[in-house]
Image (tube, rainbow, N blue to C red; front, top):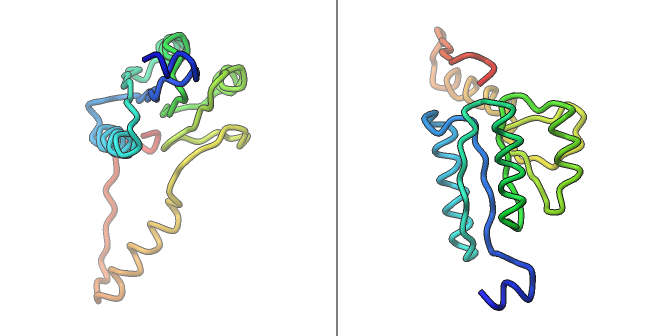
Length: 139
C-alpha cells in the first residue's frame, strides 16, 4: 500500500461493461481479469446496464478510486463520451466498442475478416447452404 501511495499506482484497472448477463461481455471481462492477474493487477468490474448516465457515473467513480487505467465497453460511443475520455488523467481504452472519430484507443477484432474466414472454411468443407443467426446488430 505504501509503495502504491508513493508511486501513485494502484495496480488496479477499471472495467465498465454494458451488460454482465450478456455472455459476450462476461467472457470478455473474464479474459481481461485473467490478463490483469497475470501482470499482478486487480480489476474493478462495473455494469452500466446500457445506461449512458450510469456509464458517466461509473467512469467518474473509477477515476475517484484512482485506477491506473479503464477498459470501457459501451454500445454507442458518443461525442460526450469522447470528451470525457479526453479529460481523463489515466488511459482509457475501448474494447468491443467503436469510436467513429477514431480518437480513443481501442482493441477489437476485424469482424469482416472473421466472417470471411468462417465462410471460406465452410465453403472449403463443401457446404453450400450457409445460414447466419445473430442478435440485434447494435449488440
